[in-house]
Figure: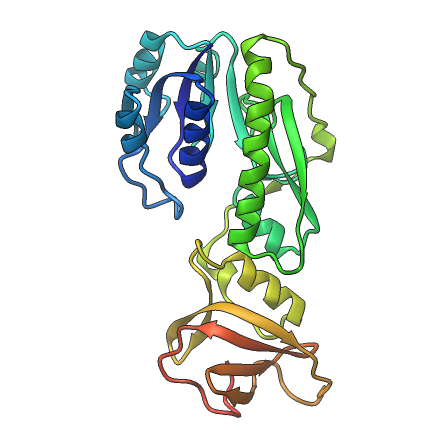
Length: 293
């Protein structure tokens, strides 16, 4: 089974490496030379050159030039793991077996953008890694493989990403021989049970201490490394916050955002229903007790 691989993020690199380890026949790779859009961009060129796999840097995945290049490789199937642009019908129908995509959510729930970030920010208790055959919709094709994982209260962006990756690699091991033997089944998604998460913007990462403590905690862990971090606007500057902890505080006569205490480098701030302690941050000069954030 000849595979054409499309991807440009860290998971793309990990999945591509897994396919190589499983002796899959990858006949070509479409990727990007650089990306300002993907915070987890990964360069696939070294893996391609090491394993003598032809590759092509692509700006428009749906271009005629790219279509012709893929067609010349005569793939049986296309794997698209980690690509931010929708594939059009010309690419979706090029390979006889179609295009297998990947989305880290419990499809049909939570289609769309930034699924791991939204899952943490919204305080979900579980999610899934899902491989599906792509159609012209948004994460709407028939499901080949789905494996759930729990989201604990201690998970942050990195630990949740690691759970997702471990799940996905096991799934690849399971379904690759099924695809090669053409012995697999798919499940049609229930569109009525679906929702689509929107693209996040910078203001989504701003901490508002009028929020409840749990919501602030969830926001901060959702945007922790490898992402850009949540932030506070303080004295006309954006201060990145990497970690907070929830602290019980029953002073309901204190306004949200007030700095209650400074303990070494830790900053205790009042929230709508309690307080949070900012543990890891990028304040160059700490605020004073009594100031407002």
